[in-house]
Length: 181
Image (cartoon, rainbow, N blue to C red; front, side, top):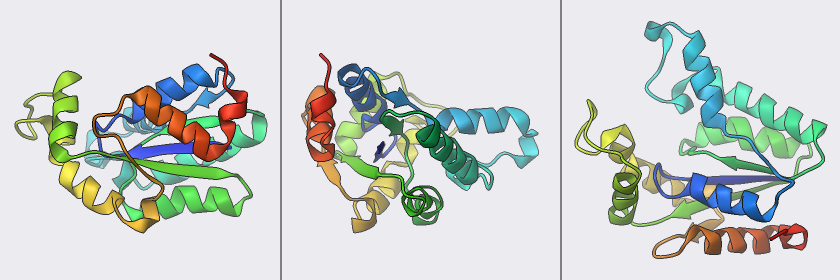
C-alpha cells in the first residue's frame, strides 16, 4: 500500500509521516521532495522552475520511484509531499492506481494562522519571497486547491498532535494491525 500524505507546506506532513513510520517500523518513507532536489542539482539554473510541481520531469520521476518501490518491496510506502495542482496529482496518483497499486491519499488541513505558526516554529522566516518564506506565500493557494473533493480524504490537524493524525490514518488504511510500538 502507498500512503500519500498531502497538505500545504508547513501543515505537518513530514511530522505525521515520522509518527506513522514509528508505528510501522517496516514501512519505507519515500520523499518526492528529494527527487526534486536531485533533479534541480542536475539542471542548470535557467531550466529550474520555482517549484517541483512545475518541473516537467518531476511528476514522471516521482511516479516511477513510487511504482518501482511498490513493486520491489513488500511493505507500506509512506509519501509526504505537497501536490496541490490537479494535473500533477493526475500524473502521479491516478497512474499508480491504474497500475493496480493500492494508494490511500490523505490531505492534512489546518487554518492559515496555524500553518504560519508551524512554519515559524520550524524556522521559516523572511526571505527573497516575502515575510514568511516562499512556503508561507503558498498557503492560501494550496488550501484552496487541497480542500476540493479531488484531494479527499481530508484530515483536520488543527490543535491535534501528529501522533493522533497518524493513528487516524492507520485506522483509515487498516494498517493498524501491523503497528509496532
